[in-house]
Image (cartoon, rainbow, N blue to C red; front, side):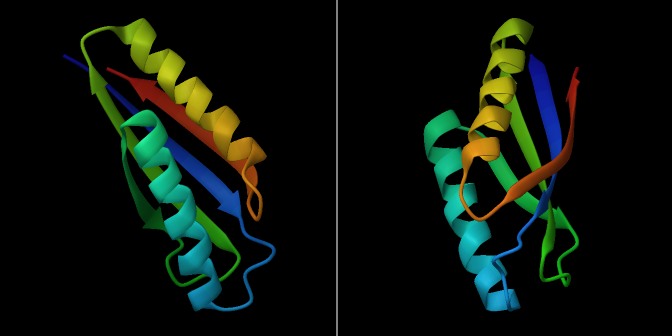
Length: 93
């Protein structure tokens, strides 16, 4: 069993309130879950309006598949409107 995790740091410049932030993140998380079959949660910066940290987990039996999926996920986050990718780190074990 191969487990891949990724921590994604985002800026949400369009968010003016926590309600805006929740709306933007809910849309992004739903898209990632549906498109890549991963688990996604906000793991840090919960009370900061224009900042967010998402944790993503993906499990499979092939490390190249996990790495490929997480790389495509990062590319998808980069082009998602209303967020700016600041940093990310991938760990595959």
